[in-house]
Image (tube, rainbow over all chains, first blue to last red; front, side, top):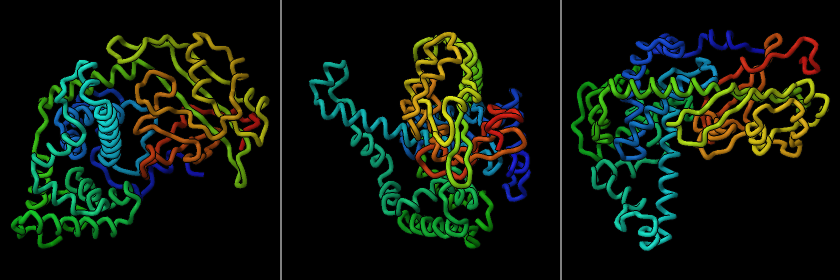
Amino acid sequence: MASIADISADSSAPKDALRPVFEAARAGDVRAQDALCRALRPRLYRVAFSYVHDADAADDIAQEALIRALTKRFLFMGQATVGGWATKIAVNLAKNRFRDRSRRREILDDAGENAHEAHGLAPTAPTAADVLLQGRDRDADIDAALRRLTERQRDVARLRLLGELSFSEIGRVLKMSEANARVTFHQARTRLVADLAIDFDAEDADV
Amino acid sequence: MSNDDTRPTATERHLRDVWVDTPPKRTDAAFSHAVAAGVAQRRRRGFQWGAGLSLTAAAATAVFFVVTRTDVTVPPAFDGPTEQVANVVIDPARAARDYPRPQLAALSPQVLQALVDSPRAPVANIDALDATAYGASLLDDDDDDTDVASTADEDGAIALSDAELYTNDDTLEFVPMDFSDDDDASLLAMSDLFTIPANSPYDL
């Protein structure tokens, strides 16, 4: 049977520059904690924002993902990178936040305007549909382009573009092969570039 | 991007920027401070839980549970009722006697809550084990962190059916295979929660 030590020393585990920082942060090193926050916050925020379309909520999710990564008793076993692990936590938090918010909105919507007033809420409080519409208004082009992707393509693109995960990490998270993740991302990227009429950058030619 | 380099190209940066066009409002320093405060708060709570089960190649053969929670008063800032909880340890040997193999028992959330509600829950509370809760999740999903089952959150939701057990000398490692209901290949372990004495009936 494999021990933690064996697994941790697994040569197939991805190289992870953040691992020492993470370990130091977990051990209570304040500077390491700060460094980890600064390194991971952007990607965690972006991934969360892509779900909730709200800056405050996205930042809260990034914060919570880091807190959980640093405090859970579970041992991080090095089967993924620290960034990949934290990103996955953020994705789950964001999905739950979005789902819970939608559920609450639906309940309030069902109750009608009177119920809103009875609860002290403004009758014009946005519904779940409003939130989605705001997202589309925010940038109709990108949202339309994203909707044209398959769900799988969107997930891969989200993890790659926003989460900055490697294809091997994406494969691990989404339970697909690295090659499949790479191909799926290429398809998504090509479609987004075409739909958004982005000038193809010369540096992308080697993709 | 070539090979598996994660550095984005200019096009990819552009896609990223149009996808997420709103920067966070807080400064990095404020964010780090909030994380540090959150970490400190969670650690003060000193909460652990764990569960283990032994498996043969053919079937589940036995089970024991350990719930450990150090005395803790939840900080007032915490969004939930203040709790004072004593150490609660359920003796694996007693679990073995009361729940002989091949029965697989599980602590129901109600039993766990009862243990939490009992400031000095005696080991005798093992009698409250709900053997009919076979396969029941130890966790709830309200994510309010107000009860003993509060690890049922996005990164900790663990169903027994999703777990694999590894043995390493006299230590059991409970290795959940999932973060949650979503697929995830990341592995976690709670090996420090379990130590099986050499003469344990659960010696694998």
